[in-house]
Image (cartoon, rainbow, N blue to C red; front, side, top):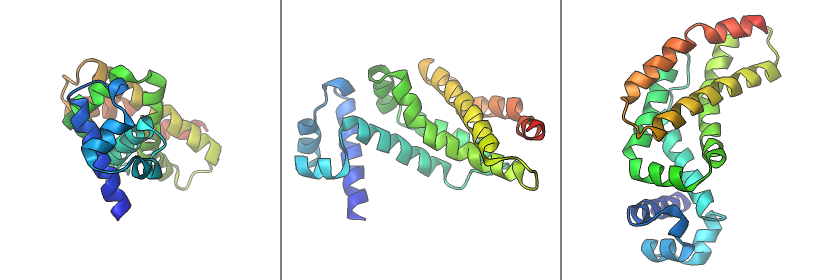
Length: 183
């Protein structure tokens, strides 16, 4: 429990500092001074600042997803992730401008895959589809969702997250079942 509190305190310090300067200018010393912990404490929890950024993204998205990983609720999960991203706009935009697209995709991949994997598993129940094909389908849709989210972030998060999630839902409706049937 204390470990989570320390991680969250470091995340809060990072978000505060990102309001003052770009990610590339923030040092471990800046973070530990702002947070009131030692460098050793930081390195006990994270390898570097980018590890902290990744953890913060995964943690925020995981909380936003909560239990919305089913065929009936995934749209709410996607919308909640987008709302969490928008709520952390200064943090996300700073990271977006300072980190490579590949690294951002790596941040988003586990959370997005987790969202889609549950939906694919639910749709595959009772069908004889190999695990590798289910994983492929989950990765395919996860990459599509990440692409939509990155475009939305690049556009300044102007479009309403509910509308984006609804558009994605309309495109995906019936597509998972149809793809599973082809496997």
